[in-house]
Amino acid sequence: MSELRDLLRRVERDLQRQGSGAEQSHPAALWRQLVELRERAEHGDPGDPELLGAAHALAHQTDDIAAPPPVRTVPARDRRGGGGAGRSRASAADADRTAAETVERLVTAVAAAIRAPSLHNSQPWRFVVRADRVDVRLDPARRLDVADPDGSAARIACGAAVHNLTLAFPVLLGREADVTVLPDRSDPDLVARLRPGQARPATPRERAGYAAIPRRRTNRYPFRDDVPVQPGQYWALGEVARAEHGWLTVITDADRRRRIGAMVAEADRTLSADPAYRAELASWVRRDPHTDDGVPTASAGIRPEVGDPLRGRDYGGRTRRPGRGFEAEPLLAVLGGPGERAADQITVGRALQAVLLAATEAGLAVSLYSQPFEVPAMRARLRRLIDRLGAPYLVLRIGYPSRPSPTTPRRPPPAVVDRAD
Image (cartoon, rainbow, N blue to C red; front, side, top):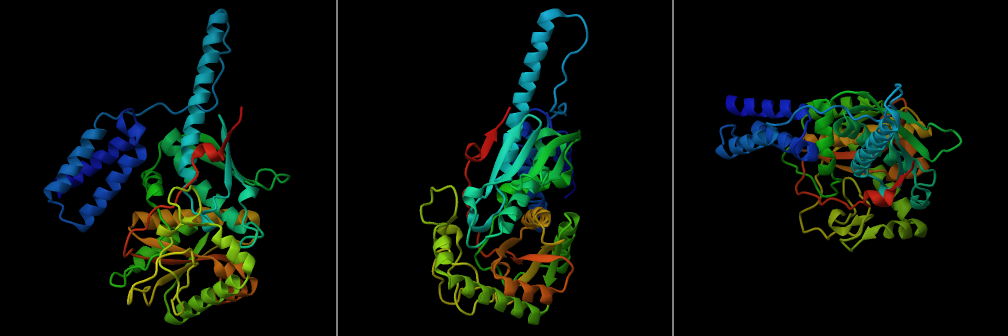
């Protein structure tokens, strides 16, 4: 155990130095390997030769890493006298090259941002990238007019994308992300503006969160009944939500769990009775695996049935086998935020993504249910049941996965990024 522990500590130290070589090209991949090796060490045999061999191989990849200089995001012009035109031209060329490199790193950061979750995987965002900032914008063309008429779900999705950017900035640029939410009152589609701030290395917490981004999934399949989530784990998720100014109420008693399940089912029936809702939902179901948005049938889970403890949306999933339904007593939680303003909904999105990434790191799966919040009367009933200050927005089902869920597709960065001078 001592040899394995020392190897993993050495790898973490080298990765924290974030230098040239493999880690600079693949930071998420190496941190993900480190996190996975730690999980295997905690739950397996630390003397396993295969585990030790994997740790030695990872340590070899990170041995030569050296700390890089921080990225210059606002290049300084050479204002000293002397040097003539040659020095001025060289200075301008350096400034242009630095700006171009920063833009490319910011576009890479956007590639992490677009892994955020969104209702129907509608991806309601655009990003404007300049050398000194990234603007996160709502995309009106991808608004869900029936399920999300006030845009609250779209703002939550954009808030989740903002959280991913706050992890990507220190990991990729070596700088803090300075975030301004709704910076222009005359432009409500401008959700947030992020500027590279103080130079600093990413923390281990940020690196682990960033490494979890590509592994996070919305898992609509049943979870395991035989491995319960421990209280320490779900209370830790609550602390993560609070750190992002949201809140997470875990439902531990059977009566409230049953009542929430009934509210989700009633809300889903109310929504499904509207032909416009059914048509909108169907327009986001994807049977072609090569699409870049919507919910593929492979990620849809199993078809909902009457009597499910928590009724999911029908994205055209597979028919369940006899006796293979959902867990009888799922662990539920309700996620909320300070209120119902646009800024509060962005905060909820940031808290949601932080919780989802922390759950991913812990090996947990999460499924999301927003139907009660799309029916005003049902939302009011759920608010009274939870009895907390602020506003609830999502019901979460949390547990250990019974099977992996495939990733849902995303539009590539060129389709969502506008580069500006």
